[in-house]
Structures are given as structure tokens and as C-alpha cells.
Image (tube, rainbow, N blue to C red; front, side, top):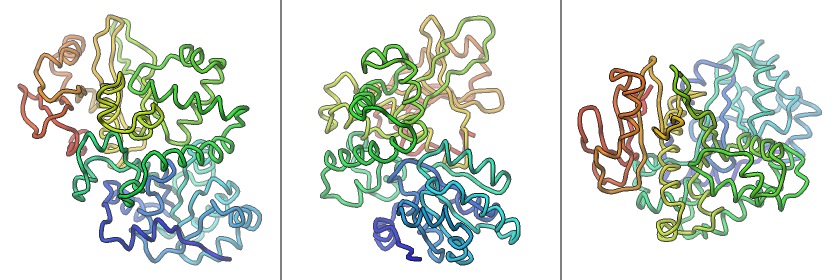
Length: 408
């Protein structure tokens, strides 16, 4: 059996400019704790690269290759035997029958870090993992490169450039690459492969229109009926298509916090794209200059803030981070809440370089609603070059170097 290495992974692994990922300690720790480690995330976020970097002596097979996927599904015992004593299996969702055979091996050998698995379609893969490998598998969700990861590698040009470019590693490995062409190819591949595999979409043209309409709503409260009207399909179709975007790690639906004590709270989730560059491309915005002049500037800044918080929490090993937003029917709102022991770290995102305490009125409303002691500390993520205080337990930050361990 031919085992082919991922060319981009080899390139990054041999490059002097390896960008260290915040999730690396979590992956190492889980490999010492569990016989199987599952690294999930969107296509091209670096799942293969991080595993090959951390475990260079492991055998490697990608089930993106149809012939290997067929062998893994039809002759799983032979396929696993050919990989030797430790292996990385890429895009494992293409051979769902493989997992029960992995279970047999890990139960027999009882070896930690025996199999490292990646996948970019979470619904089907997670179902098989929970059925076959319950208690035997550690999970890490890898996101695109964060601004903080790039800054540590001295590869962050500016926050504004980062927001318009996005965090996919290939865009930083090839500095001469055409961003628009890369995203066009990425979306075409996504539509043709992942969408057809996850859900039988009748019209890819309609789905493409849905993608662009969804991107224009990043950072906004989700209305299925409004989105359905703009795309020209039924609300149930929109609901099914959103599940595809979630399963392939393109969007996240942030739920509202609900510890209600009487006043009515908003119940709908907020929609966030998991990469600002992808969202901007889908909106037809190719640079920060274009973004800044558009209606989407504030929403993309808020999307940036969400992604820095969310990816940082996931990198700490969280599977389902205690992250929410808060809004009342009267319009009082806090962009992000991290719940910690029944109390909150409250975070606002504002597209400003001159922050002021008055921009935190939503946090004042949260304190009035749940009590002064309910808020541990407050952050305002904005366009400041240097972190500074705005008052007691309130800091203005730019989001690059958030202390995620203190958020949990």
C-alpha cells in the first residue's frame, strides 16, 4: 500500500518558518492520555501539519485518496496492519467502518497515542467516534491561524491585513500567492466535495448564493426566515444548509446566555464565520481599505474578536467552551460572555482606536441584571496598539495576546 505524505505538510515541516500552534500542548497531552487523538477542523487549517510536526516518526495515510479510502473501508484490518505501530490517518470520515477495528486494536494493545486521526466533517465522524471509541479518544478542534500565533512567529503584518487575509496557513506560506484565487479555489473544492458528501444539495448555485448571504450576516443574530427570503429557498432548507456549514467548520452559532430571572432575553443564536478572510471574500471585499468603507467593517471586527476568543479557548483543550452572548429584548447587549464558576468575564468588541468606558454600557446592564459581583472582569477588544486600563477590572486590548488560561 502506498502511503503519500501531504506536500504542504512536508513543506511547512521543513520550513524555518514553522508557526507554532497554540493547540500543540493540548495535542501532546492528549496523546499521552488517550490511545486515539482526533484533530478536527476545516480543510486547510493545518491539521495534518501539526500532527506531522509533533509526531514525525508516525506512518501517514490520507483517506482523501479514494483508493486508500476504499482499502480502509473494505479491508480495514489489513489497512491498519500496514501502518505499523503508530499512525496518522487523515480525513478519516471517508472510511466510517474503520473505527470499530481501531477499537479492537487499542483495547488489545492499550498503548497511548496509538492513532492520530483528522477529519473536516464533524457530524458523521463524531457520531462514529462516540459510538466506537467512547472513553478512548481525546479531541482537539483546530482553527485557522490566530493573530496571536502569527504575532509570536513575527508573521503578523497588521490586524487590518490579518482580518482581510484570514488565517489559513497556505496564505502565509506563499507570500506571492493570489488571495482571491486561493479562496475561489477553496470554495469550489468545498462545494464540490464536502457539500456533496455531507448533504445532497439540489443546486450548488443556490448553495453558493446561500454562502454569500450567510457571510453578509456574520456577527448578526440569525433569522432563518430572513436568510431564506434572500436566498429564495425554504427556511427548513436554510436550517439544513447551516448544519452543513457547522459540520465543515465554516461557521459557528453562538448561543445566548439564558440564566433568566424574569426579564425576557433574546433566544436566537448569532452567526459567526470562523475565518474573517473567507467571510470578506464571500462579501466581495478584497482588502481592509474596502472593508473599512463597507457596511461590514464593524461586523468583521466583531467576527475577528470572536475567533480570537473561540480559537484560544479551544486550544486550551476545551471541546465546548462556555462562551455565549447576552442580549435583552430591550436591546441591552454584551458581545461575549465566558462563564466561569457561575460568574462572567464580559467582553465587548468595538471598531475604534479611541476606547472609552461609555462603550461598555452593555456590561453595566449585565451587572445591574445579575449583580455587581457577577462580572469578574471586563475586556474591550478594539484597535489599540497597547493594552491599558479603562477603569476597575476593565481593560482595552487588541485581542492579539489574550490570556486564555485566565478565561477558564
